[in-house]
Every structure is written in structure tokens, then in C-alpha cells.
Length: 172
Image 1 (cartoon, rainbow, N blue to C red):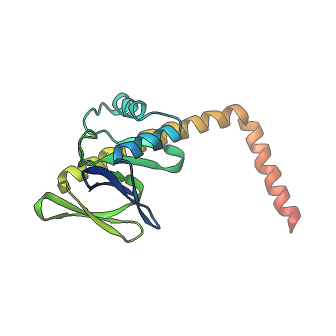
Image 2 (cartoon, rainbow, N blue to C red):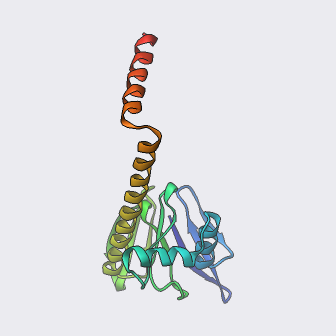
Image 3 (tube, helix red, strand yellow):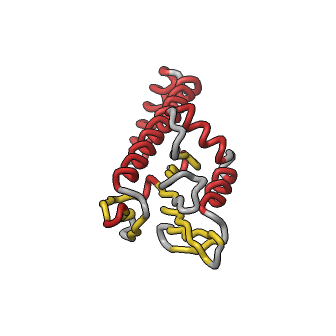
């Protein structure tokens, strides 16, 4: 749900907030994002370039780590800065402005965290990530539609529906 920077004895590590647990990892948030992109078959730089090409966003771009698993993350500041946290778009239930230009986030599992970014900036990142999700989802759905037309032309689709109805009727 979130990858937060955590300084410990002069080194930067990560506090990873997952739906069912919270863990500390001896990698920076950016290292975790890089490895996650790589695990799902791309590089962080490739994901960043895709967001730039799709949306024209060059500053603090949201990225898709894996569209099949709805893994879209956005940075809270420039990814090169030590204080940059990464937030999962799919797990945000609500957010509110907090004191000192911070934002309180409530996640879908009911847990909450306060991050060091203004609610205006957070909201902008949230909306840009939603737009990225919409673009990617529409492209995936269009490819599925095209593939179904190739695999199941209209006549075949109708026959498959009739066959399914007959199978269901024969069960009873």
C-alpha cells in the first residue's frame, strides 16, 4: 500500500506497509520500486518513459508496475530525493490535509499514515495516477476485444452462447 523512507543510523531503508503487515526492508524505496518493475518485466526507466509517452508527464510521474494486478504507484516527491515515498493508488480509501503541509491517508484496510506532502500535491498525484490507470485499462480492454473478434467471430460467438444455454438446460 505504501513504501516509506526510513532513516536508520545514517542509512536509508524502507517501511513497507502491506494490507496485512508492515515490514522494514534494508533497501531504499526507489530500490524496491526498481526491483518491482524488473520483477514484472520492465525497468523503472521504461515505466517512467511510458508514462511520459502516454501522458506527457515528466515531473513525479506515476508508474504502472503491473497492470494485471492493478499495481499503480505514485511518488510523493521527486524519486531522486531521499524523502520520496511511493503510494499505491488502489489502496487509498480517503485522505485529508494535516498540519504542517502533511497529508493523512486512510488505506482500504483501515490503517492510516501521515506523509510529508501537501494534500494539494497528493491529490494531484492521485488524479494523475487515476488517469494513467484509465489509459492503460482502456488499451488492455481494446486489445482483448480485438483478440475476441479474431478468435470468436460473431457467428461463432452466437453459437457458443447457444451451446452454453443448452448445456445449462440439460443440467436441470
